[in-house]
Length: 339
Image 1 (cartoon, helix red, strand yellow):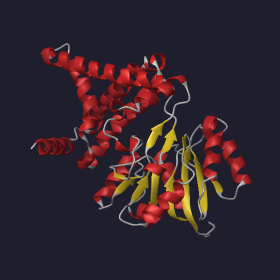
Image 2: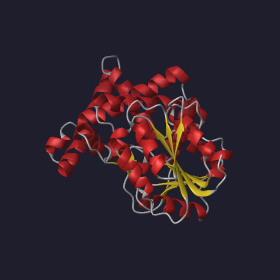
Image 3: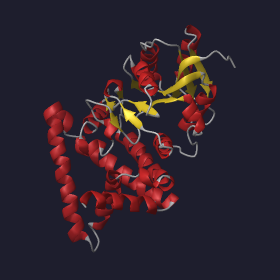
Image 4: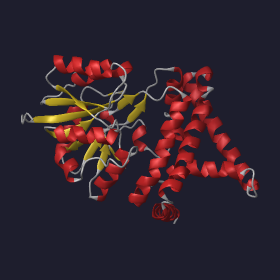
């Protein structure tokens, strides 16, 4: 391997991203960064023209390298990239997201100031298809993002549990073993939990805000959120303090829905009606921003995200076991706030 050192290595997992890939690569290569950077695109066996597009850019720009990921998994791709990285800092970027031109510079400056182990920017949805736009509307509301503080517009730096993609010192990633390949999903949150348990702080900077394109079909959205809920259980079992109260609301919604036809229906039905009121109120807010025609299907988006996540969480409890210590930690946290 060429031992030439660079300041930052950018890791980009790729799998069938030809629709957005050229624009994304152009934006990455145009980063206004004063140091040296390399861009490692790790292809997971794309069946579209992604591979050809990557090779084309590698031939045209010496900063670009293309690596092969035989499994297609994201944590595997990131670890392949980490092992090949020559940078003192490592940034992860997504092949369906757009980052501000100063992203790398801002991230390195913040890491060099010390007191943080990871830095990223807000994750802001920007749809470019019919359903993608509707998902973006939902994700601009509290009902859509839940307790994920990094998914909101912000005016100042905040500390977060995890973030969207992000930047680290390479030495810190290596010391913590990189990404755990047993996590087919939620690998970023699992890594963040390990970093926090090691005493690290994770911060989100407004100026590093990145826009990404949400799923453009209800089915794809349901699959995505089902995986989120399923692996949230696995992460919570390993890292009990990582579970947040808001992440329990979707499985509670599922249990409430089931309770409407059982002996608890007198409690479950009013609770379900309250959820309906919250969805309606949030949809009205969306309509004020984007118009009634665009916002009318947003309740479908909310229901898809919440029910898919909730059923995935319950499925995860069946697969991995109940995250008992995490649930107790949430109860203690809620009780402490009320006290």
